[in-house]
Length: 405
Figure 1: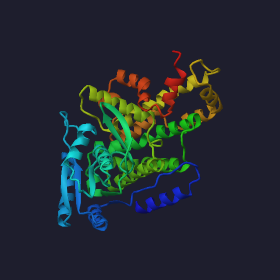
Figure 2: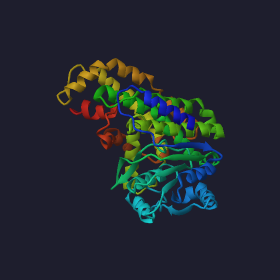
Figure 3: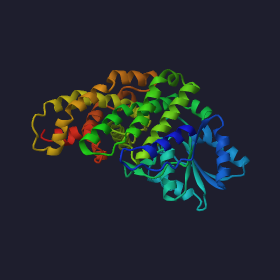
Figure 4: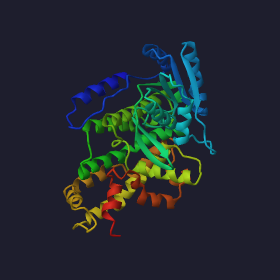
């Protein structure tokens, strides 16, 4: 993976898309059986003497304890912050968890080590950023693509907000730990990659309609990661080392692509907005949370179906500019009508996406996750408001094309 990282850095320097690319601050990425040994060597190289290991009870059992034994043998001073779960035994990336980490962290700490999946990383990412201290990523499951990104999706006063913080300075993923991850978390990682079908389509659309920053290199890195997962779907479904390695590499590369842009355009579209909307509703109802990747694995075919069933026919009938629509948007819709149709036709069918997710053991229907049809219908009308600065096709449909009722 280090060679891939070097190649991406080189390609970014040569990129002529015209948009600013952020520096990749990640110094090393290791996905191997020797990850923890190499992490210890990295700490010696950086001359870090005191670190804080952030985990939850599950991830500490899965990897944190053995990592701490390694740190002890290397005479690295460490403290452990076990993030407390809520009454549903869920760890939530919210104000309470962040405050716990900040209160339990010594002032003279050299670095944080995030041991866990997406939530633990988001909490650590933001806390380390606020303390102006670097953090190191130790994924315990190939479940999300946010390990290498700088964005931290947090729940602030019950609302999901993605706050730009910082990327890890290094990633050390032990393949033994990853292969032992629950099957549901592996399926969630695959679901997060399948979501790129609609996130990339929304990004291309936003570039046409609203001049949102667009980079062919970032697009190519993301689609390459997606295709690798689809091509190795059998191995991922089997949970063998080859499949887990491919999935983990794809998730890391997708995160690096986001890091280059400094935003999640390539990896988060309307399908993620539905997922965030459902998550907030579950919090309001005090229900147990569902894995992020499981939700987007379900929401992606819903968005494809919605775009093909509602958006495209409505666009075809748009002969004149409605009073409620910005004339510039209407003109661009007319100019790009054929391109939008080609974009939608290029997407796999909802049935095909569901078959892929089901193949790796993921849920394919909202009801399997405890999400009722009324919540789905409401989210299709309201979820875009979570990111009003993101011009998805769902945003356009609800804010530009249906305002006259």
